Length: 464
Image (cartoon, rainbow, N blue to C red; front, side, top):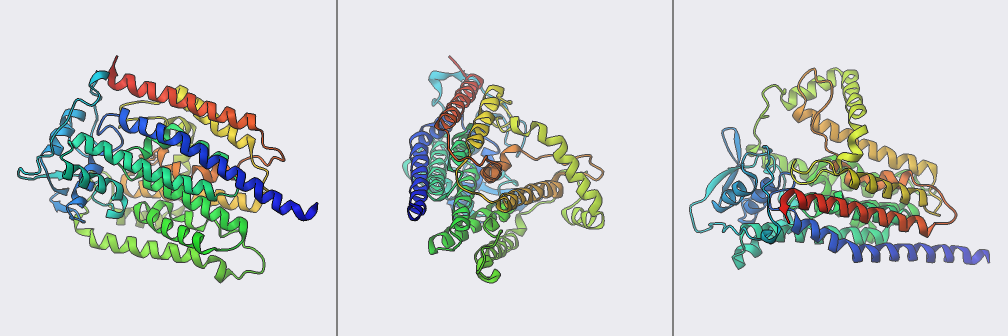
């Protein structure tokens, strides 16, 4: 009987993976598509900037162009016309408006890109910094849209759907790999913030999907105590992609490092994550050098330059640490709810969605997992999460914090979605029996959260 226990355990793990991945493929496409199509064009975070950047890349202009205090590129004039009629401004990170229209006219606006007319220079300094690899599905959507004469609005929707499809594929792959905590990853993957982020025209779909894949593959490596060829490639490639897109997620490549298995040398065990981190850092540095001419100084004259911020933090490490501590002390009480803001500053916190979605995560964590997850690994996973949090705060400090600030502004809850499964799995309950009732409750709460979020988005932008 004892000899059969490892086989029985493996069978149970494979069964859990299969159920979670199948449930995800059943639910996610419908939910993600709902956010992609219901949310009006340009009404997700910085979506106009991301559209301009993808359009620029589609014409093989891989780097931006700087003109004085503006940075962007020359693009078809119809992009600006479509943006203005939807959100009322071309200003990067400017104030947005919610244009209300009858629901029967949800797809009524169709602006031509004007590709045959003289190009216009657009300022999208926030997105011009990102490398082309961050916009693979969006660039493909622009090519398809231009080839088939789709409107700007439908090209944007196509890019959202392709971005969502990529994210769904990556998360599904992660769910087929992850050895424990699959139920928690499933719940987080189908919650409204994840669906809305993945179904936007931004980098979020690729970053969320690739981060979940790194988490699943790295935890599988840790559970099996070996680097298979497949997992080596997954952690390496996904780690490079995520880091180049947003360097704050670099710590994800070291999820599997500690605790180190016995009888395996440090050099052998850490070679893959360290090499992936090194390659990603070198490529990112190379991109920053190539694209340096497109970078403009801070648009906030009261904020010191990045070199000045670095010098101050190194000269005053205690004050810098206190600044980060105060920032999260003030930010954390509201963070869970602010995940449930939608649109681009146009749909405030949907409290019913926030409460039910948060309870769904807790239900999945209480359900737990029968896998014996060592305390040392839980601590290490939380330390990786903490490292990402520190990098996020540091990035915001370098670009947004005036000297003498009480707290660092600009940290958004959605920045933590890529690493949320890691923290939730580290904190999940160890249970001998996994209650199907709790999992059903978590799924029900997640669907209630979607109902509240989608209905609020609909009433914000449409009349019935």
